[in-house]
Figure 1: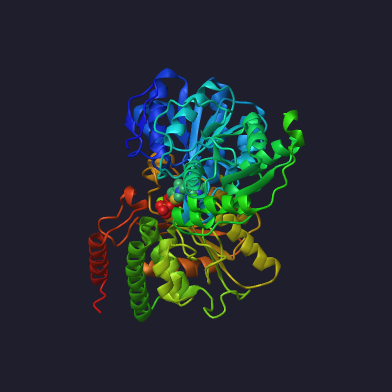
Figure 2 (figure 1 turned 90 degrees about the vertical axis):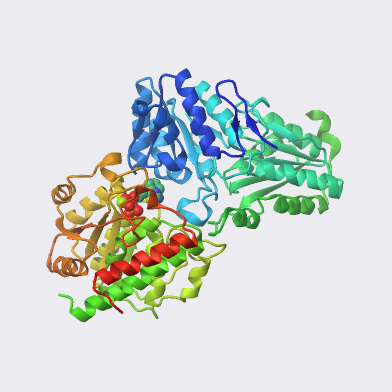
Length: 339
Length: 283
Ligand SMILES: Cc1ncc(C[n+]2csc(CCOP(=O)(O)OP(=O)(O)O)c2C)c(N)n1
Ligand SMILES: [Mg+2]
């Protein structure tokens, strides 16, 4: 099956043959015409992040700071203050941790129009080890006021997210993988909107709320469980972690009463925490489980090994769903009418 | 001054490790071979002649320390630790694989003989200055060595640490700059130039030595000279060749990171042997 990227601003690409990063690189090239104030920045990672594709097309609108991420984000802030629209790309570990204060104070506090495309998120740079894993970035970024945080499911959604981020006024953090991840979407036309979750499978027994690469895995798990366990599993692609789609969460709580969040991130502070906040504030009870890294630094290994080990792949998700479904859960139907 | 015997032994060791780097890269599925090979002769000199370390007691609090700030060059470092005897060479077969202690960057939590977890550039020199100050404050006589990449010097943290070391007159630390002239996106001087490099370090209060980083005699001389210099930190700008000893990798930006197949592996092994024959190693 060929998956095509069909958006209005650019031609058809075979997303199966392109990495997530290459796709955003090409989208940026096309957007460069639409936004004459768009400038690209990186810190010696033009090739690795693929923002180099923009550099090839617009060399005069591109700055490479060398290996200096604090400087990189400070410069982007300065450029934004003069009316430019900086798109900055480096690895997620360095964007979120090395340059955290520049992102927070220079960019978020001054509410500047800087878009960050953070590659190699989560444990996708698997055998590179802890220095190159980023399992804290979503927690860090969502704690910065004014920041919007997006974790696209695949390359096609990355294209949508990049385009939407340019229309959005204010800082945006888009976290993608290493670029070799399989795609979920067939095309771009499924109604992507910042802050609006996408239901990718309908269901009534349990809801899996996923972000990034786990969306595809959750959908596969749902299909498997429907066929083999007779379970009706809802899957929500929570591509925007902040602002989070409260409505989609509360609808799932009311209609399925069981929630499983799956994230390539520490279970502290990321997607699971954001969902838990919404549920706790609502006062509604439901069964709730978080899957992710359990407050630990990840092992070295190939990405598939790590995804399996941390139960982020379809098999792991199936196991977790079965665990939850096997638990006694006292349904208190009283509050259903309050919603 | 190195004796003739010592010189030959060090060359042999370096040759063995270079072959091991290629074998390990083949098994690992890819590695930062370019920067691994450019620094290799310096690290061999440190571990096989100068550093006071005991492979049977890798956590000895009085041992000399080594910080590979350019941690991505682990491929040139971890096989060396194996050759030194810190662990079984067979473990290298699992490089990059699930739960291996060895990945693209050195992990001090997992690797015996490794003093710092590095890989995020610009962290090594501050840690090394901290170790040197740690020795001074605790009245210990161990020495700290550190290697940074030339592209890595773009990171401001290096210069913050440089100031600290000069301010505190740190003289139990020796810094090497692996001046191989390439980073990921291209030649260092094209991407973010660092020249005039010697003048910058002098202005920061450091004593600067410049050597050919592949000449064992010069490396040894620089280390001995540095130890004579008191009340001032010393940096050795080591002019090196990225990918040194593997003909198709030498001075090529693109071999910063790469995978090789068995045919390229053969070519690499042959190229290494040829270089050492030219250096006078006939056995
Ligand atoms: C803080 C940080 N930013 C970016 C990277 C990605 N990266 C790995 S190696 C490298 C280039 C290093 O160049 P150089 O220091 O010259 O090393 P060498 O040539 O010796 O390999 C970069 C940018 C990183 N590891 N750490
Ligand atoms: Mg270099």
